[in-house]
Every structure is written in C-alpha cells, then in structure tokens.
Length: 209
Image 1 (cartoon, rainbow, N blue to C red):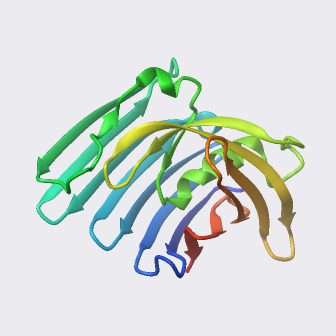
Image 2: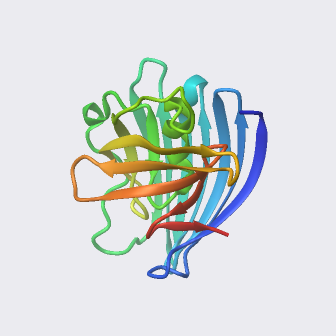
C-alpha cells in the first residue's frame, strides 16, 4: 500500500437517504489521520481522528450540534492502553439523550480502536491492521473490542466485534470484501472496501458517492 490522501463521501442507504458523510483521509505507512463531517436530519457532526503505529487510535475529537444545543468529546487512548474523555455541553439537548463521555473506563480494556456510529472511516483501522485485504491477514475470525461513540449523545461504550476476510482485493475492481459482525447483538455486514481499506459500500449504513 502506498501513501495517499483521499477525499471521499458517502450517503445513507434508501432507509436514510438524507444523511451525508464526507472525509479527508491521509494514509501513511502504518497510520492514518482523518477529518470528517456528517449531516443528519436533526444534527450535524464534525470530527478529527489520529492513529499511531499499527493504526491504533491515539486521539478522536468530535462535536455534535443541533438546534439550541451542542456537545464536544475529546477522546484519547494513552500509551498504556487506557482511555480518557473530556466533554463539554451547552444548550438543551433532546430529552432521553445519554450522557456524553465514558461511563465505565474499565469496560474499554483491550480496545485499540474508536468506532464512531454511522462513520465508515472508523472501519478502516482494523481492516488495515489485520491485513484483511491481502495474504497477511488471519484465515479466520478476529475478535476485537471497540470504544464505540454513540451519535448524537457522544456516549462512549464498549462494543465487541468480529472481523474476517471474505474476499481478497481484486486487482480488476480494486475492491475486496470484509465481514464485520457484532458479538453481542444480531448484526453482520459484508463491507466492500478499496485498496486503502476505505468503505465503498456498507449495507444499510453508507454507500460511496
């Protein structure tokens, strides 16, 4: 894989056609940095992500704004593997929205990646680290723990997921397929991804424009 900077955009599937995602992603050797925005019907999101070596998350900065309210989350994974979060709020958020930040830091033990809800970019790190698009990858399933960031609440929760290679990168199409499964709920998806590990099609979540 060569170094590259990409400008990519996705729309929601037919069940969420008004949602729009856009990101600039710089992939360098064994790390990436990315900036992105997301527009939903009732709120807008802006985020910045940086990983260290091995595509392990170092820092995620994300803001959500709705009419009359906003929230900001500064999420850091420290070199010893601990996760910490600083949050800011203003205005009056919608009723029933969970509190932002990490409710149980110990639950994130073992997590190497953040996973922002509805954001295709945060699937890229485990795909690249595990080598799921080439012959470096494991032949079976890999169980992972994610620091999952809910939108629009910005609550940070543990998410157990399973990644597996399904189809290697096809030189003719420039795409491969990776299977992502939730280990705690009835959900699985076959993600079509390109040579940089960026999602082309995530069924029922995002489709590349």
